[in-house]
Image 1 (cartoon, one colour):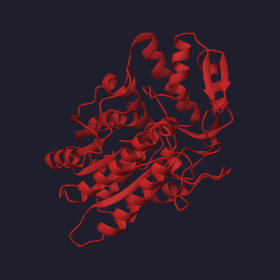
Image 2 (cartoon, rainbow, N blue to C red):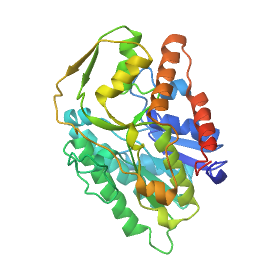
Image 3 (cartoon, helix red, strand yellow):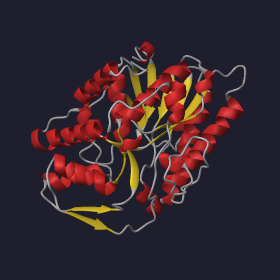
Image 4 (cartoon, one colour):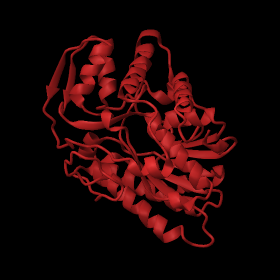
Length: 355
């Protein structure tokens, strides 16, 4: 898979203790990579990193600490870097805007700056978000060349991270003596087991069902591009492969969103879960702060240029997410590795490009 690029390869994941980062580390373990991680400690209990227990050479520190980032990257000599570390919450960004801007802007800058001075690094993928686009409440998907922006501090900080990434790409990677290639990746709203981050919808559903409590949710009519966490991760890994192979034409921004049928409202998602798992009482609350109402991604460029495509539809995504939480809460079983194997097997059956 991925042309065998990751076997015995030194790969660094920032944010490896987070939800997405820990899934990525577990997959990289399966691919035979030597994984290094730089992050803060997990901020929830339970958390997916501890439960899935990936094999990682860890440095626990803040990404805004430039000297610490430099020391760890220099020592570990990674060949590929996936930068996922972030303050990931829209609502928290209203409460802590300075932390959000510092983490998402300065932290990204630190990794880009260190990467360009580390000879071993051939590729760095900066992971941002679908919320980096200026929200116009369009009914059609945002494309990579659409205007960046962001009303809330989180979205604005991620738009800034994209601008910084573009600046580094244009300023420093066209030099004859610099072989570093830089790409950025924008995904949708990820589902999947093990996300206990505050204000995450499936976590709230799972806890309400397991404890037989009422579910409180906001923005029932908001449309989101729902996808399993493994979908964008497959895109990041494909980008890492192509950049490591020095294919310069892929050093640019990419959307890795779901198919159109997966763009459904919060209410529709909850109703599907209730029908598949267990009926619960739901009460919808008025949001305290403004959030995007209609957000979908157009991933046509990735479909056509990378030949990347999703593996699971919305039904499978919800089924496997329910299965993960149900097994955890009812049997104390963690399904991460098994689901990675099922996902890759389904990708092989569907003749997905990276298999």
